[in-house]
Length: 239
Image 1 (cartoon, helix red, strand yellow):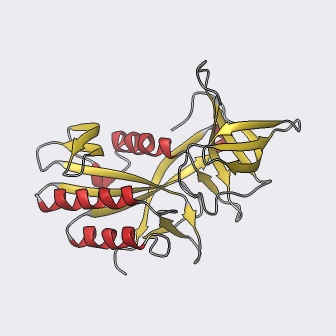
Image 2: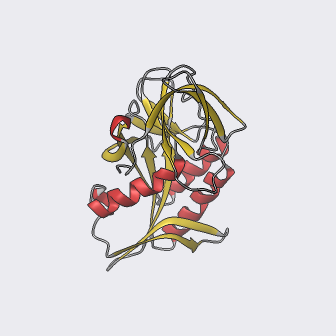
């Protein structure tokens, strides 16, 4: 997904109040930008490292610039804008890049479903059973080389989505949890039991009840304002 406008580069100074970050520009001036990520952003906050941000022409935004990509302490790139994850997946589905999700005639976004007042990110329909796809953005890498985790903070909402997917799978529909890995250093993904034991329990329970889990990693080219899902990577499905 290439942004129509070129992203600008700065050096990260700090993230604060969850939704704000200060960056230093090439001329030495400082700029406050919007941080579109409600997670802890563990291992994505490296003061002094390069980051990239987009600009909106909206007259109503207090902070018209949005943080898109961070450089991690290990030198990897991470797409921290969680709002882009669904768009990346939608683009990949339309292009047939996620081969496990090809062959459907229609794709609808944000469809109400389940028993807990949820909305599925994508509902794929066609000749066979409906396919419910829940997308999660992955940016946490820690521990063993290439090891990624989700979530990076306690996520009761994430656990709810797993319960809903499990019910869909048991009803005869196809239910898919798709990890959108916006991190150039992650080669495999696991449930972060050390961060959210309840999510981990819900994850393995959902897998046992028929939920499919996929992980696709993005190629990140901030100099071209571009992030694209390119290849499938491994997911740990058993403890």
